[in-house]
Figure (tube, rainbow, N blue to C red):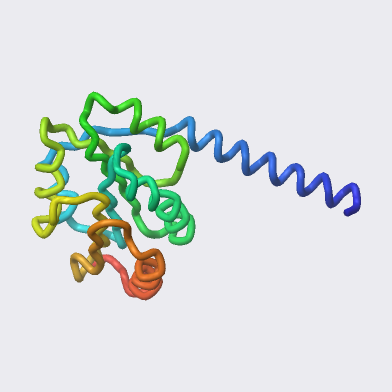
Amino acid sequence: MTMPTLRIVLFTTLLFAFAGWLAAEEIELEEITPQELRELGTGSLESLRLVNFWATWCSPCREEFPELVKINQLFPDVEVITVSVDQPDQREQVVTFLKEYPMTGCSFIIEADDPYIGLEAFDPEWKEMVPHTVVLHPQKGVIYRSEGVFDTDELIETLERESKKAVSAP
């Protein structure tokens, strides 16, 4: 490898490392009420919205999170929202975890003594487990739902197919 090529590779590597560090430092975890979650699932959309409910204590949630980050990078036009069902007093653990897996989009923690009330408010078809992933379409409503770890290929296929069709209603 020539010296100029080596410098470019090194510079690019450092740039990406700095960008990842910067993104990790900017993690914002907002509180959301069950009523706000209901509105998040029923309000008007301008594009596809992927909502993932998860918890730091949930092994399957932790297993699928890196895939969620990849999907977020592959589909920048899809609004990705993560909602932690951890107890509000575990906020620091949630933020620490999110710093390990930075991505664009909003991150919330449910503001309720029983966070599962928020999940029920968002998706009445929820079957009492996390992770829980839903993709909403501006005109069609729910186009994808997964209880437990999502099937990455199936989710990507759905997003590829529907992101071309998703335009906001006039």
